[in-house]
Length: 327
Image 1 (tube, rainbow, N blue to C red):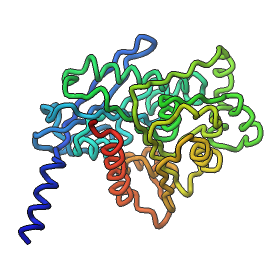
Image 2 (tube, rainbow, N blue to C red):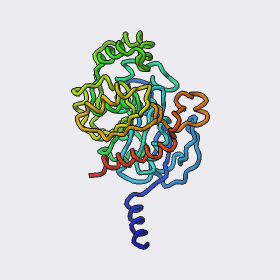
Image 3 (spheres, rainbow, N blue to C red):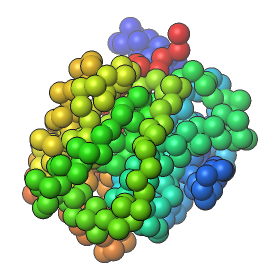
Image 4 (tube, rainbow, N blue to C red):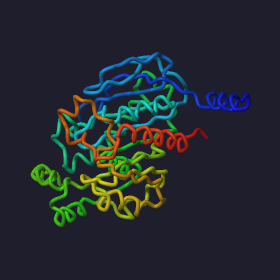
């Protein structure tokens, strides 16, 4: 009994747990509108229920940060999402000792859909993430607590595509055109068709923005996987944790995550989630959100999103702890 207690005590000392502090922020973007941020971080302060859009989260608002040389995780949401889309995952990471920043992508969020499904959106997204990293390392009030050598990214859907580009991926939009010609019923192709005029006006050569500061990535239900070839992902050699939903009807695996898995130069840590649909990786819905957007809140019979997120969040924590461990 005493030996077991000693082992438990040693584990607690070796892996301290904090509460999650939280604050809003804004990152400047010289090429666009200021970028709205949600920032979670370790804190010794007591938490309380706090509103976050249509959610309620248990955090310590604007509390002092705890710890030094902390790793940084950036979260890139999917089409039409926002900084709150993965708040539960952000809290789990902050509780485990990470600084987490989630941005609301300009032109592709729940308030502003002006760039959705356009070429500019997919080229702007990675650049916006880098602007946020710049801010967190150089402008954020608690920047001295971040270790700039330990940065990771988590991206869902369009955010998964964003993460792959940041990590060195180069997409081929010609493949998207061919894919939509053969699969006009695809959800993404339907959206792109509606924005065809906007896309047609932007035919300048694509310049993909990569960020070598990012050392590991979690990619969930990536969109536009069919735009990546073996050569296009050849430079993505960082550790990748890949999540696939078994019943994904928005970004079907065979045209997206399965392709990414097959062409990555190094095998990712792969997770196929039984019974899950595309939106299973979003935070469990509140009643208010379910009334406004029921299509992202309805899971198939037999799938418990809240229970899944306990496993999902812990898996992300363990992955980033291992891959962003201090030297």
